[in-house]
Amino acid sequence: MPMALSQSFKDLCAVAPPPTQPLAKLESESSSAKPPLSATRRSTAQDLLQEKYNVKAIQESENDKAEIVIVCEPEGMSLQMGGLHPRASLYEKPVNLDAAKQAHAEFRRVMREKGVRVLTVREILAYGTADHVGARVELEEFAMQALTYKLADGYKLEEIEEKDRYYLSDEYKRTVLQNMSVPQLIDTILINPTVSVAPSYRDTGLNATYSFEPLSNLVYTRDQQITTCRGIVMGRLRSPQRNLEVSLMKFCLQKLGLPVVGEIQEPGYLEGGDFFPAGRDLALLGIGLRSNFEACRQLMERDLLGTRRFAVVRDDFEQHQDRMHLDCVFSIVSDTVCIMLEEMIGVDSPTRRLVDEYTRGSDGVYVQSKQGVEFSQYMRDNGYHIIPIKPKHQLEYGCNILNLGNERIISVHMETARQIVQSPHFYGDVQCIDYSPITSMYGAVHCSSQVVKRAPRRF
Image 1 (cartoon, rainbow, N blue to C red):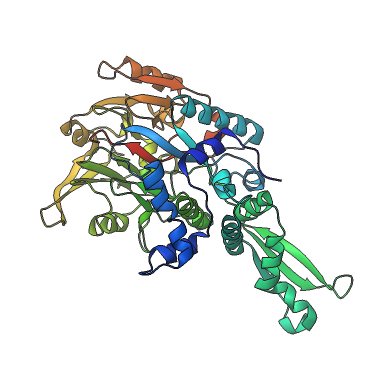
Image 2: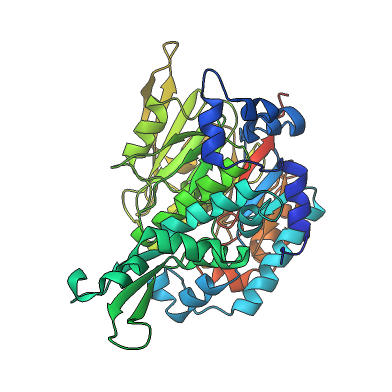
């Protein structure tokens, strides 16, 4: 049975074209000098998006108007599994999934109320599969990566009867997936299962044990990629248990026709919570516990930023899980106002952040133009007024706000929201929502949203 036509699906239909062919086929056709006849009947998803819907992945400033946001609602067994042992699942606290669903639904409602197209991962994956075989095939092929069949430890293949070895094959696995419903396929991807098969010497001849590496952190869609002036750059996450998330988000982006302009390669690490665009002239990236300088080097050398200057914000002295990303301690709320953790402000702070700035020359090469500038001083030098956030409020996710553009802020912390609106330099609006069931998983509204398109004010 097709999934219900939710508001997210309506948003999706307003953004994406019908996926009539598998992505891999479209990519090969679009790169061919002489595409076959079938390719001439339909442009690639990317072409249709740019031509019909005029969609281009771009984010020049955190204060530009957000138009398209990708989120992942806390649904299904992957979150249930993560909740069984919160600490080992990278969560901060135990999770109430029903409360988390309600809080996330309210977050989506608020964004839509403010004119944002909100797309969910589950519905991107399901989009088009009921009507287009190509979309269905592509989803099955991705599920092939997530579902693993293996011989159980302690057994040799010779112990499996020859007629039963077929049930360890990709051919059998593909048959299994072809018979699944779309929600089954999506759940299979999100629980990332391994089936270990052993001989039973009775009944069907086989028995199985199951292990899972669920995508229990995918609710935080900020981390797997960044959106720059150039477009979308896929990251590389520190936690091995999150590796499949990057591939899955790339699949979703390609299905939407949003081209990926680059990918961070080993030994680089890049997580989206460390990145802030601050206009055509400046982008910032925090490095320390999660992202590293190798990722910065790749971004500069491959010209993936599109800005004249690049500020690398170094966390040399702390690197604490409670402040793992730059968006845990800092955010941009307008073109001239930012919020920042109070205790890290100043050259004498033991947890101060230091900025190395790189400037792109006429030859396109970035060279270091400043070194070791204390972060708050750097922001003031760039025309920002700083609202200091108390340590207690930072731990309650006061800094982790979402700017929908034009100083329209979603906050999860009332005291911080009050501080922002009371600033004489802030002229926008702040809406505060209860997001505590989601923050239990170690992140708030900035963490759980990926803005893939903002309207550049220069256009």
